[in-house]
Image (cartoon, rainbow, N blue to C red; front, side, top):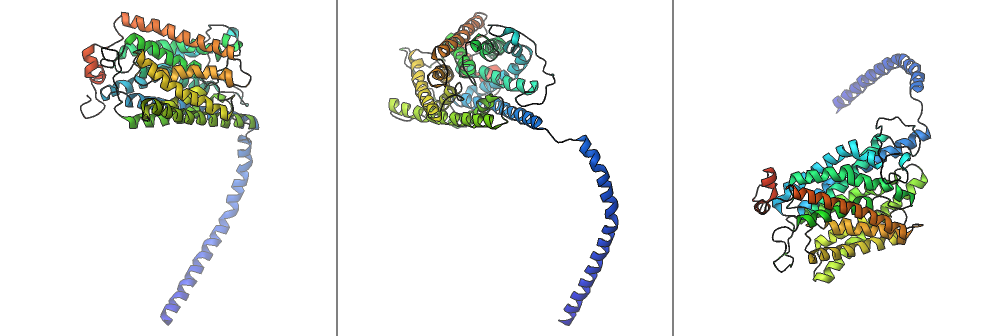
Amino acid sequence: MKRWVAFGLFFAALLSLTIGTGTEALAQDTPPVAEAAAAEAPAEAAEAPPLTTAELAYSIDNLLLFLSAVLVIFMQAGFSLVESGLNSAKNTVNILFKNAIDFCLGVILFYFIGYALMYPGDAFEGKYFGYKQPDFQATVTAEPGTLNPQVDFLFQAAFCATTATIVSGAVAGRMKFVGYLAYTFIITGFIYPISGMWKWGGGWLNAMEFHDFAGSILVHAVGGFAGLAGAIVLGPRIGRYTAEGKPVPWPGHNLVYASLGVFILLIGWYGFNPGSQLAFAGADNTTAVVKIATNTTLAACAGGVIGMATSWGMFGKPDLTLCLNGILAGLVGITANCDCVTNSEALIIGAVAGALCVLAVVALDKLKIDDPVGAFPVHGVCGLWGGIATGIFGDGKNLTTQVIGSVACIAWAFIAMMIVFFVLKAIGILRVPAEEEIEGLDMVEHGQMAYGLDPK
């Protein structure tokens, strides 16, 4: 025992000696280091002055708009999953390819053509058409509410791509890939930017005080009615209706994908709607953003519940796909007015959208118009409802103005795209031959399969 005590005392003495020596050395080195740091401090302070309140607000506004743009771009993944999941497995690659390429083409065309048409400047205020090439490299003053041209373009381009990809689901399973590329060029380069200019670019609808906060009409209804035009000109898929005109059930091959896609779209919508505030710094902007987000959520949930209830009442069993489309319908319906209605009104708007979506799906089947994913019921019908609902519920909004603006935009999109699709049909690049449709577009159009199993 004595040996262990002695060893402990010896070790303690050695440790004390070591620490003392190290502390002494550190004390000798400290003054020069401190003096050097003190000498450098004023220079650093001079080089990096503290940020002003205006600079902080500028940073908050632009960084949050950038994050909103990323969320909207993420919606492309949601569309891809919903559309592929609700269609046959043999067309999965084709649908995924369309959703990828309409984003790529859409952004490039919007950069070179669309943005200049949509935002032509004050010289075309109140007009129907204008063009002014923007300076995306312009330097701006860092102050609240000022957007850097780079992030402004990114956010607007994401909206443009969303409009284009809505049509993909309506024409799935029978449209030639080259025809889809031609359609994408037209809608992203011309159709969407021109009607977008009427409101968001300061055109004639803006002068009338037409209100579409985030695009129930300008994005969703334009895309939905363009999809309707495509579905009509293409005609139904082979076997979709009997000789007597009765619809044949055509379930999607992967409802897991469809469900996941809807929730990705819901998440993306928090960039779509709250991001459209375009300014985030300050108490007023923060209050507006959180109200918009809550209205968006309430409308989506109400749409899903009523979509389920309506399908249950009509068909005897709750239909998952109609519940999912009801969620999207509620989102589309609230997009125009999420900034100017109460929470209770948002619930009503979403609930009506959910019911309208189911009824529109049934109506299309009666008319033998084949829309594989319900793009027109969700985006066309409920987009139109969103524009009209703004006039009914929106604080200070005029119903007559809302009806005029809504009808004008959808008429422009529908008529223009009908002409485009008929031209594509006339030159033979619209619909694939019957044997290729039966085999599946993945192999005949791309020589690829989405899965290792037989896609049929």
